[in-house]
Length: 285
Image 1 (cartoon, rainbow, N blue to C red):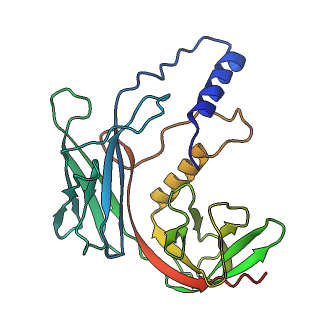
Image 2: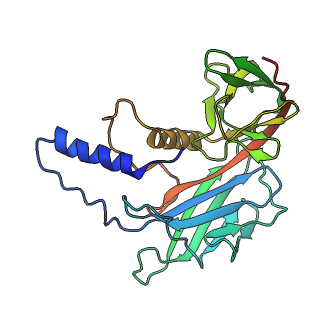
Image 3: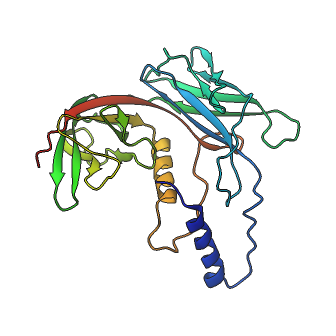
C-alpha cells in the first residue's frame, strides 16, 4: 500500500487551519537531501543488494535520484565483500550470486565515496545487523474464514524457549511474490507462545476480493518465515503505522522512521534467516 502525498498534505493543512492557537511555519518544500539506504542479507544463497538514493521534498511526486559511484562493502566478522555497482539499474549495489548469510554473525554495512550535501567533502555511513536464527517450518495449511472472506495461512512449527524471538511472514504464490513490500508483510513476536508448539497459528491472509490474484486448485502457496531482529521488528511497525491511513484522521503528522544507518541517513539495513513452508491450494472451503 503506497502513501498518497495528497492525503498527507491535506492532513497537515487541516491541522494548521483548525487546530493551532499560535502560528507555526513549516518549510516542507525545501528539505535538505539525505541518503536513503535499503538493503538485506538473508540465509538464502542468491544475489543480495543495497540500494542507495536521495530523500526528496515532501510534496515531490517523482522517483528520487539514485546515488551512483559509491563504494559499498559488507563485513561479516571474517571477511569484507565489496559490492558491485550495477550499470543497468542505477543506485543498486549487489553481492555475488553465491553469497548467503550465516546465523550468529553480525553484518556491518559501510558506504563511502559519497557527497550527499554537495559540499565537496566525501562522507561515510555505516550500519550493522545481527543475523538471528529461525525455527524450521514443519508444515503450512489453509483455512477459509467466512466472516472476512479470506484464506487464513496457518503455521505449524516449534517455537524456541528462553529467548525473545521476532518474526516476519511473507507469501509466494506459484512463482510470484504476493507480499513484496514491508507494508504487506505480517510480523509477530513470541510473547504469547514462547517455547510452545505453533499448532496452526494464523500468520497471514489471502483475500478473496484481491483482483490481482486468481487462485486455482493446484496453485502452490509458499510461506516465508523470517527470524528478524527486534530493531527491524520495530521499524516495520513504524513503517506500517506511517503508511496506513490513520483512524482517527487527525492522529498526528508523519515522522521519520527509526532506521539504523549512521550519520543522519534514512532507511534500514537488515540481516535475517528464512524458513520455508509449502501447501497446495485445493479450493475446498
